[in-house]
Length: 216
Image 1 (cartoon, rainbow, N blue to C red):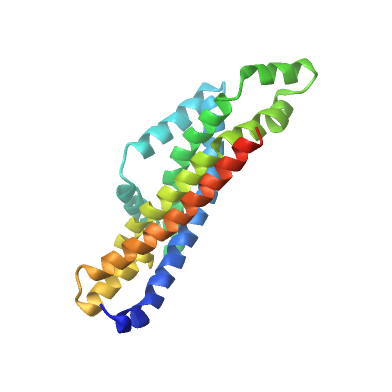
Image 2: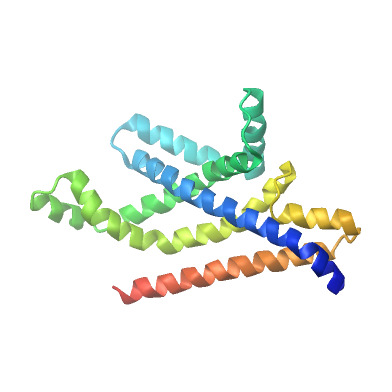
């Protein structure tokens, strides 16, 4: 691995890194939306909704992401639904992440003192208004660091989509390995790039957490 190697193959790595970041951002956004719905369903007094959400969370958290990825990717093909590879990856990773984010959101909401709801209701707020104006803002503040950590985890876990030929950073590393017949070096480059990406996100999460503490 010399200067020529990096001049030739770094663009492939950067393209893969961009794919990985795009996939991770899309998955965390959809995961938050789906996870919020699952969290509210799990806390719902409606037993059917609660059981349904809890069952989904348990199944997703109890099975490997790779299996879920295969089910989504090939399952859509079986029912004659053809989606772009990127979209298929986003759906699979989002559905997986939603189960974990749901528990983060649920714990964040339940961490808010119950007296907050009682106080809001005592001044005439409806339950939905109290949740929107009082509970949710405090819960969001509690869970932002955890969501940041989930994003860091997603950046690393999305490497698994390379097994389906999705052109992420790991796929780029394997492409370079095949082109150069170098079994080890290209993986080191990918590892360094993953480390840089996750370190940047982790630092941003730490800064955010410090600012939240200062505002208390």
